Length: 197
Ligand code: FE2
Image 1: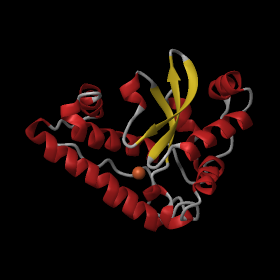
Image 2: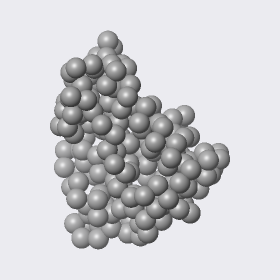
Image 3: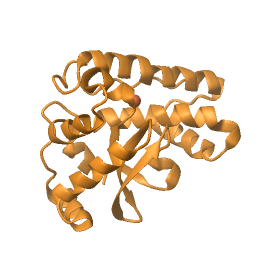
Image 4: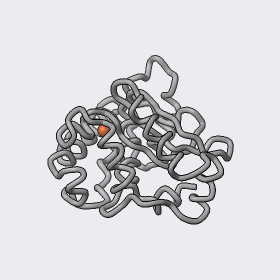
């Protein structure tokens, strides 16, 4: 039993012009795939197969200094699969219903949420992730560095933006704020985010 690279939820050119097929061919086809291959190599016959297996690998390796490689690769497999689902062609706009109400209650307004989420994404130093999470029933914006993931901190992920340079450098070079702005305005799949509540 080995983990497999999950299919992308859309074609590799589906997010153009905002994220190019070239970026997705490297980011999904090379980077995400390599995390899957590395994880299976590290775990051998005990690799597991399902999303539940992957989450239990992440939780059991979190904070264990002898399992840093397993944690990093498993978390990156999970984070990337989640990130692909957080986007769709013709995404963006604003959430509705219960999610919109919760965002307004937690951050004051959707614009304030966008400001705070953007700030988390652009201040994650080096390689990392910006997140909207649910913690103790409340919405919260966080950032993680490297492979770190909300699953390892008792939080439920609702939305993420990958801010490793490999996510945007081919399309935006060093302009991370422009990539994050485009992610929010043109790409976020709010139906998926709402389904995670
Ligand atoms: Fe990535």
